[in-house]
View 1 (spheres, rainbow, N blue to C red):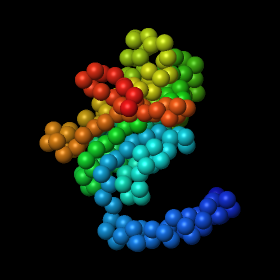
View 2 (cartoon, rainbow, N blue to C red):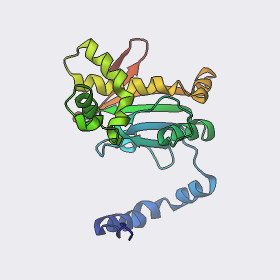
View 3 (cartoon, rainbow, N blue to C red):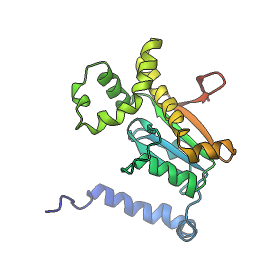
Length: 215
């Protein structure tokens, strides 16, 4: 028996509204995208959190960004073990096939995944330590960041680890040979940002100062 059900009516109504307005007013552009394929300038790796609306934040048009979302905007290290790696596959496609000029990792305030990592690493979430926990095993990627933050002892552990998730991902991106090659040849640049949802602010990582500064 199939578990899938028809779309909720409110989504059907929203689609019909979009088709009658936004699509109808820009149908030539959509047909061009369909016939000529996508040519995004940047890839953005952001969190699955529904409050993080990347295209709205940057005022992006359809076809402008290649977007990959996962728990806590993490990129795992390069691991060509023949297993299934969704995030790594997205990075490979963006860099080697789409030839994006920029890869941007975006963290955010109030990240539930980062909170889960804090709880797990501090012994407050034993369920995430179970091998069967997909979230827990994914958050293992951030364990080195947790150790760094704990040793630094910041006043706001959550915010510090949210920003560290961006830095861990940027570091892991450079373990991919095709990413490093593109960066070294100056065909690709990597960027890290952290978004404060409540204030709407955006903080960019400055590698020279090793800190995030508000834009």
